[in-house]
Length: 239
Image (cartoon, rainbow, N blue to C red; front, side, top):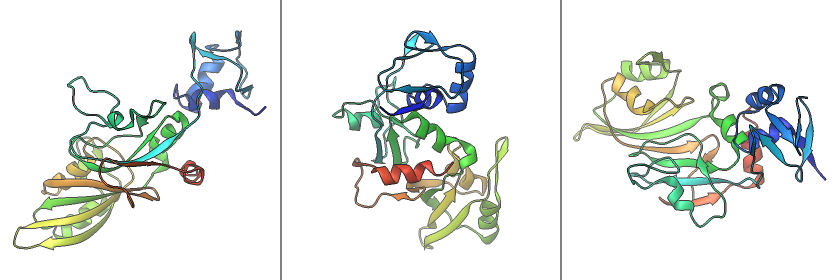
């Protein structure tokens, strides 16, 4: 019977990151089949019960989906205002999925949904710099100095964004609008909109077209597909 390290099992259950799980073990907060375990590297099988802070963890098979999020949908499992959430599209599945990061309510595009806590923590950790490619329709025409600023990094509130890749896809001189592709690694709140705002342009429409090596090919708004093992393994190689 296959065994896995205890801290990995805790992380996969979405309780905490692997490093935080190690701290929990060392602090005596974890029991295996009723016995407190404080030794890092301890391995457990699928039939052993793992309890963290007196709560048994749920150990289930992992599933990760690529979802084409529509506009007007909340990137959460529930909403206290009664708005539609991304979880509403997965009610026919026998396991609970949650989003990896978020997309704004009025932003469409690629969003990963998973029950693999370790994978989610890995992808969202800032050090791993996962490519996120957005396509924005903006008001006005980007000037060379504004493109240069975006590529170098702009000041948003208390932080400066890291260098971005910028590609103008289409310009409409009559309407004074542009379609611009922006590639970033970060995921600050409203980041893409705030970056364009920092160079004096408002975003009319925004979509995330790619996440790491994944894209929306073959999907329409509201549809999803499950990632295969090779795709999941490739995602895990970002660490």
